[in-house]
Image (tube, rainbow, N blue to C red; front, side, top):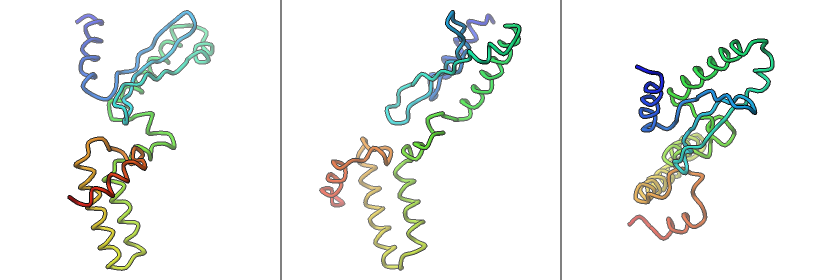
Length: 159
C-alpha cells in the first residue's frame, strides 16, 4: 500500500476520534510538528504546533534531525491515541471537569465535616441540580455555568 493511502486511512480513522495525528512539516522557514486536538468546550479541532528550529540546528546532518523529529512525532501520536490532550495539562484542566464529577467531589468533601441531616440536604440539592443538568443540553462542564444558568436553575424548582 502506498504511503499516501496509509496516511489517508489514518486520517479517516482519526476523524471519528478527538484528534488528528501529529505530522512533521518541513518548510523554508523551519520545521514544525503539527497536530489537532479537540477543544472540550467548543468540540472543534484546534491546531497545535511545535517549532523544531533549535532541534534541527543541533544536528550536523538533516537525516539525524529528521530521525529525532520522527521519534517525537511517534511519541506524540501514541500519547494522543491513548486519550492525552494538551489542553488538560495546564492549570485550566479543572475547568473541563464534568458537572456530575464536581457534585460527587463536593459531597465527598462535605461528608467529612457535616452532620447527617446537613449531608441529606446537600445530597438532595445535588440530586436536584444533576437532574436539571441532564435536562439542559447546553451545560456540560462546570466552568460553563454562569449567572444566567443559576437563575434558570432557581426558576426550575424540580419540575
